[in-house]
Every structure is written in structure tokens, then in C-alpha cells.
Length: 92
Image (cartoon, rainbow, N blue to C red; front, side, top):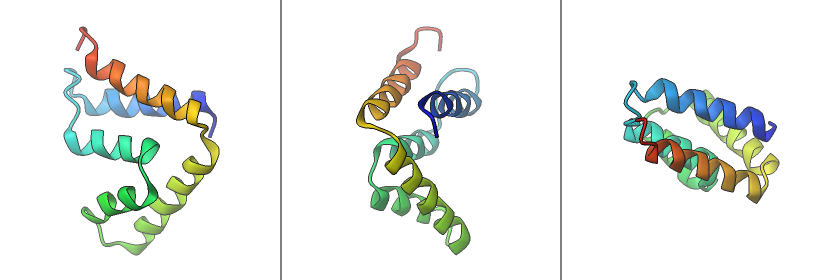
């Protein structure tokens, strides 16, 4: 996944979950941060708290591994900055 695509996806997810006031649902915020910035183990532990479906868990692992292998540290830094800017925006 290209950085631009990842940032657009992240922006869409954060906007759609904000309810218009940018007060991100803590579970969604945690999931997004763990998905892009956390370890595989921490992300899977978070997902397992909400489902025992093995197909979903395998897909979550596959997607996380894909992100981990494709994104550079610079990409991850940019994503973290976008998350922080959204949370700190005075428009929210």
C-alpha cells in the first residue's frame, strides 16, 4: 500500500468515526494506532478482544504483516503526525 493511499484511508476512517466532533472513539483510535504503529502481537491481542473468528484474525494478521513490511519508518512517522494533527485540530 502506498503512503498516499494509507493516509487517505486513515483520514477517511478517522473522519467517519469522529461523529463530526473529532472525538475519536477510543477503541477505533487504539486500533488505528496499533495497526499502523504497534507490534503484531499487540494488534492481534486488541483484535482478539472483540472476535474469536479465526478467519478475521488470520486476515488481521495478514494485513498487519503487509503494512509492517511495506511502510517505512518515515511513513509511520507521517501517519503518527496525521493522527496527532487530527486529534489536536482546533476545527474539531
